Image (cartoon, rainbow, N blue to C red; front, side):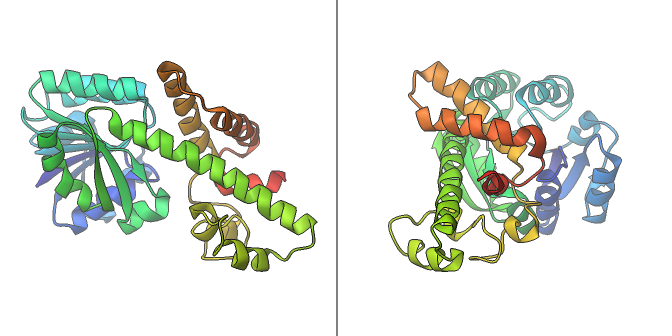
Length: 288
């Protein structure tokens, strides 16, 4: 299948490479020449504009920074350039309202579209083990599923348009809350004279167990290898976590949802990301 891939950043580059490995012809575009060079090395054909990449493509995958850029790309570069009837997959993390607008407008122009944000971080993007949360019609999901499966370990249909984004921001709000709690528990254990490995051995098989502890432990040398073992570099940047928390707060306000802990997590990450935006979000333990 000919697939245009727009946005080759930390996540998109690995995702595009995995589509190549799956046997697809990937037509890649990014504003960064460094990203384009890496894409060429991975086997992608590269283009100087997004609309050139979209020309003749049977599918378009996008991985972009925010909703405004997503709309600009789809309005100006995809519509009128990708063949009518192509399947469009936006894997960016954006607000629910924009995701629904993009699906509505592109479908009015003859495309089928899904919002398909991801969970898993850079390592999962490179390794093809992402989780995709997909919003859109049953027919659009059926067309998108095999493309997404080439880049991930799980592809889950969340429901209608925008529900993929809803799932992503709810999940990441919960993740932020869990990580802060995990860091607080390890910090308190240390102050109480309890060895970190011993606390891990106990809590990881007790009621305090959570993904932030057993799969992404914020303490170096404890549990599986995580960004904590690399000076809190790589993984999922605190600035991106803050972005998702802001989206969650906007969505909560619009829906009338009570998210007291989510709001507190946002305030904590706002303070942390002011000087540590590129640091992995588990680095929040350094503030304790």
